[in-house]
Length: 70
Figure 1: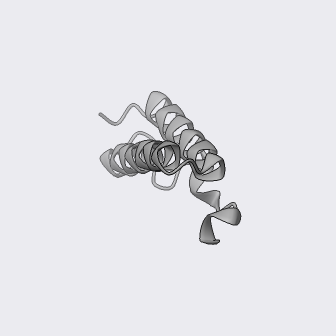
Figure 2 (figure 1 turned 90 degrees about the vertical axis):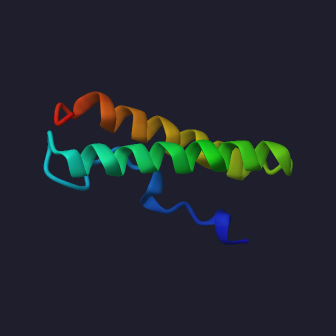
């Protein structure tokens, strides 16, 4: 299954310049994507997908907390 591979989507490393709108937007996208994965994983009873989504969501939240661009 594709979700068996742990990709760096759950990394909380900045992807754009710190304190920028682009970083805030990217972090928001990561958080939303993670939340969706978490919900879908719960819905289809896929614990790996649910856990991966939770990690992505938290990483996005962490990036947003550190970003002062917005």
